[in-house]
Amino acid sequence: MLQWLRLVLVPELRAVPVDQRAHVLAGALFRALTDAQVHFAGFACSLCAGVGAVAGGRLIRGVLHNDIPRLFGGLFLGALIGGVIGGAIYSTVLLRRTRPHVRAAIATRGGLRSS
Image (cartoon, helix red, strand yellow):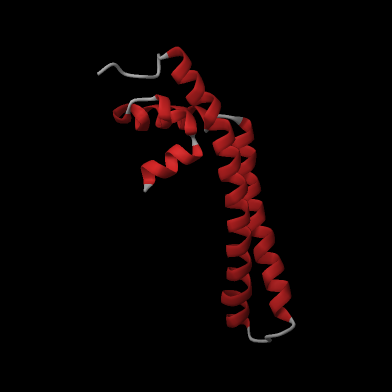
């Protein structure tokens, strides 16, 4: 299942031998993690979770006057929804920044180990 998901998300990996796909993908991922856009997307993910927690706390405040349900209900649910939205943004940016590095490793064949 994981192998199929890798090939769907990064179709360039089909040109790489099976035993070297994980190595190429890991190298490209580590190079992509140094990109400023990925750092900004990580900040945006955290910001989405924070805004979701604040919004969830404000929405539930008028309904429940007890602090414990508001804390665990509204804040947690809002942070969860915001984190999912932020995680989708982060994964999209990370994938977009990883694919060029995979293409470069395949083109130069320097990122591939010889068997």
